[in-house]
Length: 310
Image (tube, rainbow, N blue to C red; front, side, top):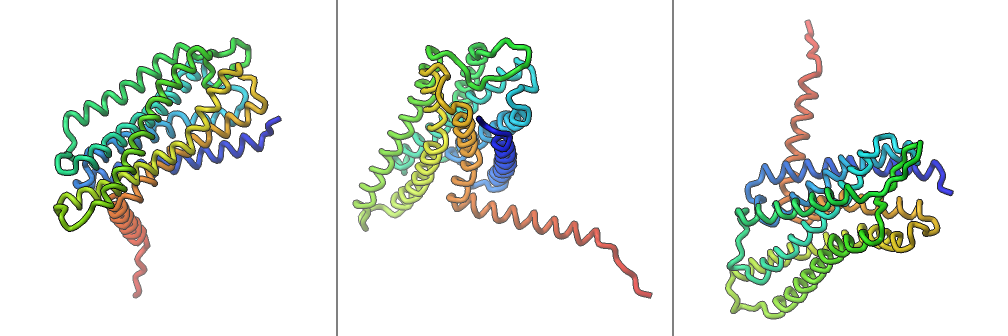
């Protein structure tokens, strides 16, 4: 039996993740705006990923925290429950598809360094639009599939959907894009090793520098995919097994919440993993924080009353 302490711990953890994710997203947005050199195609995909994480924090994690305070009662309407579940899936799908797009982009960067364009083009915007459109369509479709109990005390069964619908959705929204992520990252690592062996004085300097820069970016993408695997896959695996077992797994309640909180952790990790491993982002972070510190200190000093000595 899950006690109140379990749900209290979940509330605290949810609140912590919400704050970290929001602050991290603001820092990424500010850096992207302040530093022109950061406005590249790859970073545009990353900002899209951070946006999905920010929306997850504000629209999904925050409601989860409120739900835990009243659990098992759902303090909102049944429609809100369906919207919450739909946003949960849509934003998770958006995160994974954005990661997939970033991985494919890095394959192009590392295999064709002299012909690869880093500029944000109309094509880039179209890809981003398609990514979000796919996620939104998933959310709208799922809104009409959620099975909610018709009982006097309103409850909200999280991600409760029949097996005939859940398995195809897991394949389309998780298995296929995640397989593409893994395949592209394996290819990136393989090409990186081959190029490291072949690098010599004959290679053109500009091409060599482009490849080295692409390799560093490739390692960062690999870490993002690795963090996603660790944090998110247990959640999807649990729900796949849960659907097959008709939601009758032993200890289902506690396991489902732990898997969910692990998934939420990924949203708080993405901005930090990419931002701090990217030198330009890291440098811009430091500059922004220095400016903020200076303004805060100057504002504090300005408020100190001046004592006149007669």
